[in-house]
Amino acid sequence: MRSIQAAYRIIRRSGPLFLAVAALTLLAACSNIRTNDNPTSDAAAPGFMPGEVVTAQGAESAGLYLPVFIVAVAVFILVEGLVIAIALLFRRKRNETALPAQTHGNNKLEILWTAIPFVVVLAMFVGSYGVIQRVEAVTEDPAVTWDATAFQWQWTFSTSAEGMPEGKALSYTGAGRNGPEMVIPVNETVRIRLHAQDVIHAFYVPAFFYKKDAVPGRTNQFEVVVEKPGVYGGQCAEFCGLAHADMYFTVRAVERAEFDAWLAGEVEKANATPTPAPTAEPGASPTAPAGDVTKVVTTADAPLAFDVATITAKAGSSITVEYHNDSTIPHNIAFFAGADATAPRIAATEVKPGPGDIQTITFDVPAEPGDYYFHCDVHPAQMIGTLKVTQ
Image (cartoon, rainbow, N blue to C red; front, side):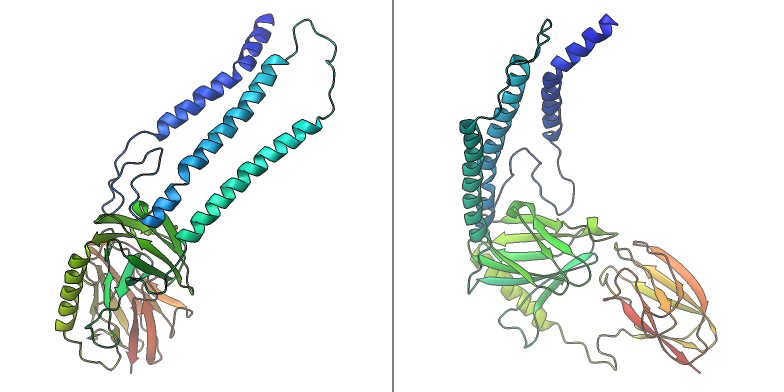
């Protein structure tokens, strides 16, 4: 019994030491160097302090890190030091049985330990508020403006450009983990406007030391001045569904002369591409002929589309649809007994990524002639079509 009590006393007295060892072990584990193998993500290994920050706005935010950390460490050492000192100095001695003299309050100490935190918090608030105002500030006339539109699970970057036909703009949509690229000039103000088509996403570039959400029905914007040329990886930083981990992109910052040359080349390529001839249904793909097996394909070159937008079938017949997903993005094809997805589901394939995924479904065509709806469950705003039922 005595040995148990002795062991208990040793553990109780050694508690602060055990906590200190555990904290040091945790810090050592967090500081372990590991490279990032994501194809378009930040190349810098994670560390205890902020990594390389390449924007003027990000440098403002990163500048708060060390002062706030020092204040936090000082408060921790002061509080924990006092707790340990009081526990050791005023612990009950083995032969003591009576209570020590009791002190009920000390006005000077209470004023002191109220005033010190107030001053510290006020100083941190004033410093942080000034940084926030400078980071979130927007100018009247930025040098370049990009629109970044997020959707499950990709990005589209678009910007208007001089020399483009009226109503057109440069637009780039990435494919899976490769993502699109945004090109910007260094040492100039670039405005980025964020849009979301379905759920909340987030635009995050680690080297910018900044993150902002893209919210459906709302346009969020921010401005950056990149101070160092380079290619900087980014990704969606708000969990948005099945393929969230594949929403990557890159931002390439170049000197102004190189940016102008890139822009002129992109405008020339866009103007050299003939505008597709209008069809009866603008934006629709060719009509799939009626037959025993109808093949629908999503290609790597057009990863957010069906290669046909209209499938024809006879009322009351049986139809077989063979869906090929040759992109790296998860897709499926689902048919509905009505004009939209609120109607009962007729049949659907499973959601699977490609390339090379082939699934076949056979189902009975509705008995009533008319136009019925099909889409991809994952991309219902981009990948849609019509099942045209005839007599």
